Amino acid sequence: MVSVIFPAAGQGKRMHAGRNKVFLDLDGEPIVLRTLRRFSAVPEVDELIVVTGKDDLAAMEQLLAQAAGLKPWQVVVGGSERQYSVLNGLRAASPQADILLVHDAARPLVSVQTIGDVIRAARKYGAAIAAVPCKDTIKVVDEAGIVQSTPARRTLWAVQTPQGFQRDILLKADAQAESDGFLGTDDASLVERLGVPVHVVTAGYENIKVTTPGDMLIAEAFLHTDQ
Ligand code: CTP
Ligand code: MG
Image 1: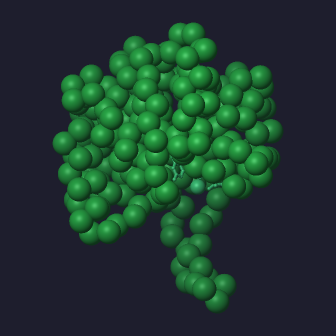
Image 2 (image 1 turned 90 degrees about the vertical axis):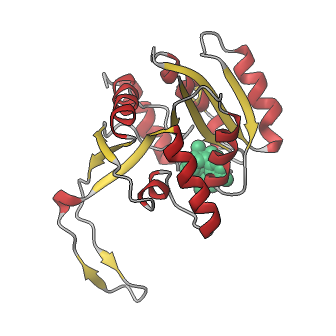
């Protein structure tokens, strides 16, 4: 069984919308609903767990209750950091879930193909993440603004979600991070600390995280093209 956890408990500060960005209409439909619809179109997905802020709980439940065609869902309250929100979602997942996926609610353009690819790779290898090769040259820069190094671009990937894991691996990674006080910027970084290999699944450049007002325009443009 596959359960998907959707962190949606952020404040969307960089969007400057005065509310959680996942409720904003993207081409006539709230971002979070678009995200859940993509996952509901994947046969292997069994359960959707949406993690939201305490103040948004009622609004989220109301929004999802009105939506037709979603896979079975529940809404739980998140934490002050994304990692804590994911952990709350994890605790709510069905005990029958052997594969757990984590996907930012703010990535509504994820393809059904990528979701399926991550599920299959997580089953096969234990841990898998969606990513795309970096298009830009990336430099490591110190606090004084001086370039320290230029890693070879062919080794660099921009990481997205979904990220998928066998249940025992993710639970072990979370327990270790908690006991070490480690806070990662994605879920796989917790698993990497265990020494478990994380497999990269090539995804699409359209799978952006809607973060700023400009991203709304870009996401709309992608929705209007054949992506
Ligand atoms: N998120 C969460 N719990 C938090 C922080 C973030 O569930 N404490 C979620 C967001 O709702 C979002 C995803 O994690 O779907 C990725 O985070 P980000 O894009 O940074 O969203 P926000 O934190 O809402 O935006 P900002 O950083 O601009 O405030
Ligand atoms: Mg944030």
